Length: 198
Figure: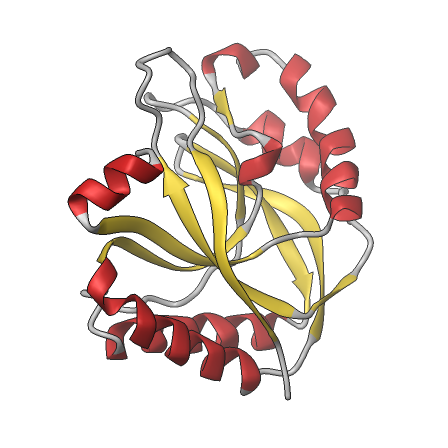
């Protein structure tokens, strides 16, 4: 959905996330290259690097009237959370449909930040699904049908990226493809970002 379409509908498709820095993206890129040569890799839809992030809370379509309160509440959530170390580590799958890279480091702090982001959105009036236990993951590929992802998760087992300090919370807009071109990726745009801590 373009900016003009957002203006027409008065709604934006949003999520709250932690974005890995360029160095972490480069390390993960190097780990993903050999995965794309494995048998079955062509049947997967690989995510673009611009879409690599750890989602904390998916908000869905948000009415723009809620945004000022949402911004204020997310800012408070960020200020209440101190910076913490994180790194991309290993990988896993959701059934045979989603391949992801995992996280290591201060996972309790990451989970707490996810809980605060979810609560901030709910209190701002965003209709949120019931909050489930947070499982940090960075989506690498998806499939419309079940695929044996074990070779891919096995190849990621030994991967461990360099730690970085998570020092901000980002609200991201997802602009869905409108061209109809097969395989086109959503475009992600950071709407606001708030530093962690005081």
